Image: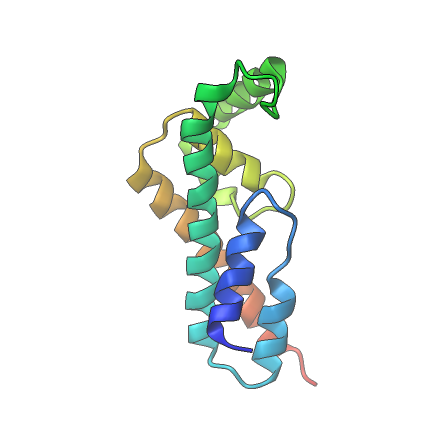
Length: 141
């Protein structure tokens, strides 16, 4: 496996598609891959995937009146109200399973400026992968 495969798996894991990059990261770590390169690959791929969610949220609303639009108006309103309640800092939790991807999508809907979005998501995801690598590296085989 290459660092590119980890980058791609982390990218997919951050989109609205279900996928887990930690397995690939763990296998690569056990096989002697450089932890710093693993961290960079996983963090950048996962952050870029969240940027796709932000873009979808930012521009997909133009189609909300279409029959095929995947979200009902009341669920969009509920998500926006939650984002207003917890604010921009909730993006630090974009790494969380189940709620993380929708947070980044709603940030796009709410027209969060891209640079603060990018910084906060990168910090949260970087901390998460740092912890995963540290924990995996400390487990004796």
